[in-house]
Image (cartoon, rainbow, N blue to C red; front, side, top):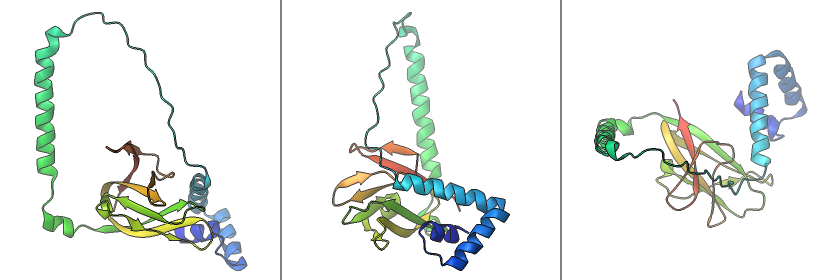
Length: 189
């Protein structure tokens, strides 16, 4: 289903296939909804990338009472939180042989950068190694398909040799230690 929608968006269908596509859109509600969702995503891909986030200033409220009484309680709570986090990470780490048997999901990554000479992707699923992407003809789209294990992953596109940008189609992001923004992708089997 996704392939025919993608081929329609990329104008890769002949006239008979386009007719079949339009008939299917009009008769199958689920196919119609998915087509609209992917077309909306395509609009985001073709839009300008947001390069700046406005700063918000929050005024500090005047203190009404002292927290000195609660300081020992806060320290105990901090210790408890650290202990819970350590236990969580110790028990959530899978043995290496179990990780190797984990099912992989083929994911397609696409970005619209018609002026770029080269585009790469790097993320937790590539061990942060830069993997070159291929340009789809003269369309301005760069794409790659990668096997990604299920779970939560961070990644970034590298435009040229050093401009790092988050995926404009993934809304979940986080700042890294180098001042860049990474996309956060959750892969389910």
